Amino acid sequence: MVASPQFSYWWNPQPYYPVGFTDPPATSVTPLATGNQVVMTPSACPGWSFDHWEYKNAQGQWISTSGNPLQGGALTVHMNWWTGAGIHVPDSHMVFHVKAVFAETGYGVANMPFKYRLSQNGATISGVRQFWNVAYNESTPTYCCQNHRDPDGNKYCHAHLPHGFPFDCQGTTITQQMSDWAWDAEYANQTRQSGSTFRHNCYSYSCDAPTVMFHEAWYNNFTLSSSLSEATTQIRSFGDDDHVIRITGIYNKGTEQNPEYVVSHSVEKNGSSGIYSGAWLPMGLETFGSIRKLKPGS
Amino acid sequence: MVMNTDRMRTLVVVMAITGALSLAARGIAPGETPAREEPTGKKYLAQDSDFPSNPTRAEQIAMLRTESLEQSLYRLKNINMFFSPGPVEPGDASIEPRREWPLPDELELYSVDVIMGNRRVLKLHRDLAALPHDVAANLVSRRLQDALAAYRAAYAADEQIHNPHGFTRESAERARSTPGGSLTGVGFISRTPDPNEVTLSGLRYAVLSLVWLAGALELEGVRDAIIEVSEEAVSQRNTLYEDQTHHDLYKASILKYLSLYSRTILGTALLRLSPEGLESQEIAAERRTFRQTAFDARQTATDRAGPPDFSRGEITVEYFVGITDAVFDDILWRAKSP
View (tube, helix red, strand yellow):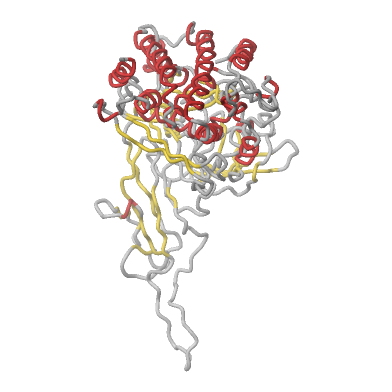
């Protein structure tokens, strides 16, 4: 994932130093070469690590930052057409191409806490599931399976889930699971940033993701913010045909070998036909489940 | 894991009767007649069954403020209060599989966090600290023996422990050789819809909480009861270590979730209640301090909801980590030595 709090829908490509009221009035302005600064931070999926950044210059060549010192892996660019120190958008270019490049680091064994119930309103049971041939990031928590790929060879990286949320490497929820709606009571007093339940592919997303991503910022788990959301306050039933994430559009389909980003826009409908939540998912094909923001911790 | 709830409830009634608090615990001298007999029946001691299974901080505080010492001790086995919210259990990932034996320290410390995150335990710490030392020790010792008896019965009756289906070494090998394969051990009940439902995990945490409190408050009179708990724990550990039929994850899950074997909690209590003290016995262990708020703080140090609120007081408990199996055996041996 590539994230920055400074992403925006648009930037003024020719920013100037502000001019104050002077007497006589100023007759010239000075270009602000450091204007529209954007600091981007890469965040690797489990099993991957950030390697370097690449961006396109005016001639359309990819320029690599390999070997250049980057503060914590972050890349700083200036979204303007001026020249000077640092990285700028080529003069007159409307789109600036930047991508973070990640390298695969290997897979192993992960012990993941999870919870389940034997009946809808029964006792909650906590346990640990041990996965093989996976990589796991406890802090997120997300995990990737070495052999879990879609028919095009894309690697699946499982969702950013409440800690211990049950999944297995086949992309199915562990048997006897309820939807995440049924877990509201369990998490009622905790802050949960996101949650999702999927029958098939699932990818991470975050509620506070940037609204606009740089073109070709890849690979598969960068995210866009929810276009529609709600603060959930009640348990809902879930699982019928009207509670399905529907893919409403797919853009720039690509693969790991052809690292252009893939984004689909998904929405979920409730039984009374109103759309009540939605989110942008990278390659959210065949998804089934729910996307939502949850209420903040009490 | 499904508990035989009826059987367990029967045990609880027995506990309530045999473990009725002494007059001394209520500050009444032997031979003296209490001016007013307080109710001690199960209805009085049990928690309101409509109390939320996942109570908010405010709901917990309101309940505990009206709870008597007797009620707090009786309700200590309520598993819900240990996990409201309870700590996040650490996961882990590595290229090579982790050795399950002995359990790593972080899993032991998880149990410490669970206990110190229970506001009822914090309230008990305050209430017991206010009693005369010997009175508190006598009270805790008796309650610990009662809780241990109930725990033993529940442990012996657990089918997943004594009559497991699956969990074999062969099944583990199949999981490892299957792409995306996984396996599990046994879980523990961490929340029940009825707060009074008795569970093996709740009894386990009740026993360990009483051991922890005895150590924290240096109640020397509980030492013999803790030795008994420790011997039970070592017996459970040895049985699991010697099991050649089932895979390590299964055995580790019983050891860390359902057995009493917590080197940190038991070892700390024995060391703190040792007449000689740690240094003179040359025990290899690292000393640490757990700083926790009062039970009615807006936020405790384990609430995961912001900075802890120490405005209503604090509880500081010194404990020891880095206790290996061999060191624990040595501590127990020394504790039993005359």
